[in-house]
Length: 352
Image (tube, rainbow, N blue to C red; front, side, top):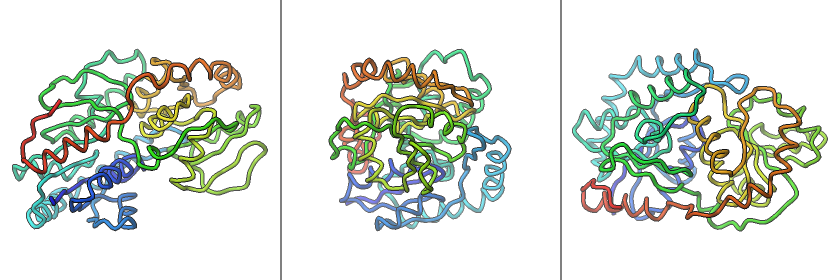
């Protein structure tokens, strides 16, 4: 049995879901998680969690709020020296066999200061550690997002990038792109053909979507806005991991922002995706772009979608379904094999 220290960004469910999936696939090891926000939900699963401030992203009107996001970062960084000292003490006392991070700031930075290797597992580093020709849009968003990923979150020795689209790494000796990391509940659930459409929103701020959905001849099951009364053909569902997976697996297609995890699970179940990436969140925009580029669905970057967008998507659902499922789509086994190798040997050479 080994000891694994895991710093996790807690401002979004996707990071915590990936961390929980990794821990669940490695039950023989002892995990200690560092992070704030949703990371504390891991306590309910029986894991130990040490609280850390977050450089969290804030949203308003389906856009990244730059001012609040910068304020959150400055508030956390203001106490950076004290926080790094506490993380340093945790690392020395816990003495982990492996240090991981999923887009968390303080853990890899402190590990680097101590001369300890840290391994990154996330999707965000595809923006900075892989070769690609950027779409000719979102220039400011691309610059700001890539800069933050590069200068705040890249203090690692090895970068394991999970992604539904494959891009060549800039440095193959330290970067590996793997198929997506999927939750066990998703892997255990069988896809069926239902008559509803699943809607998921990263942040409950995209209210302009609802009036248009009411004009579409379909039933929409909506997650991300909490429990509220149904409105015509809109059914609002409470937060539930199992309920969400079941509704996604039995849907006709999915409407979501550009969050990587939900897109991956939809594609895994063979469901086309209509993506509305959150404005100024370039990683979401790139995910949405590749959904369209690969023929898995379509996307729109407008803040007031029209009914014709949905009508056109409905006519292409069968076409999109034919394009999905042509390649192996779960990277869990390869990723866990690598992490177990790191724990057992202390060698961080990427095994292809």
